[in-house]
Amino acid sequence: MDEAASGGAFGAVLDGLAWFFGNIAMSFWNFGYALSHPASWLDWSDNQAVMRFVYYGASTELFFVVFTAFLLLTAIGLWRGWFMWGLVRGLESFHNSVGRVAAWAGLLMVLQQVIIVFVQRIFAQPEIAFGFGVPISFDVSWWSEELKVYNALVVALCLAYTFVQGGHVRVDLIYAPVSYRTKKIIDMVGSLIFMLPMATLMWLYSWFFLWRHLIVPKPSASEDLDRLINKARALRWNVETIAFSPNGFSAYFLFKILIVLMCGFIFLQGVTFFWRSLMELREGPESEGRYHDHDKIEMGEEAYDHAEF
Image 1: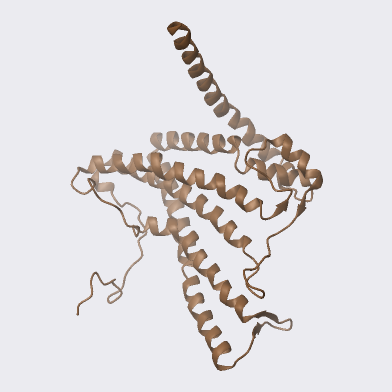
Image 2: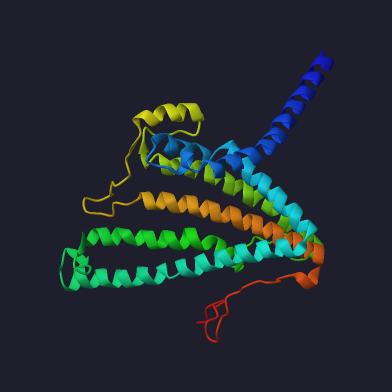
């Protein structure tokens, strides 16, 4: 009986390995088919293409395409260090650019709040309208609730940028006193064990959370492709436009889109941080911080560490 149990466990392990490496092998075909048949998932005039896009956006097939690409790029980077440094510089530059642009949403939020106060409290007007020729007019409460979008932009699009700039708070229990080599190993393990799996799980949940507020019948993560294709016959767009107040902000689907973008940026930055830590481990302490594009702080712009009374 024990032999049968051990044989069954060994067979399950073999089946798991076959499934794993089989999906890696199939990822090349899946990627090539997606590139050679873009209309099958990008032609949204076809309801079935929409459902394929929904399914593959959080599918096992997409996961193994991304995983295989990560393995290949890492292998090439280990063979040619300049290639991996190029990936690191490109991705960090991308996150810095997006974050620096999105950070201006904070200023827009302040300016809009000032305008709202003046219009509502001083001029006693119920609406704010602007435009050239064709004015765009919404109730003051709509503009007030729309301020949340600016906050969401800063949070969702600046997370990876803040990580590149070293602005996130780190709970340091053993990191500071350990050697340089150990620090880089901790960074690499943290990326692979914590950052990337967390971003992947958040993507899986947020992807279907987004689409359940855009189309009906509502798709489910538990449904396979054939089931979603069958649902395509009854598909219609039903974009969420329900506000929390009678005249309030009515585009809350934007927040779902930002959640998906945030998960994608976190995943990319996790990969970038792993590659940077790997290269700094290989090349030694003299390579630490190489090609970092840190924001320059002018005299008088330093943050206060403490308040003096």
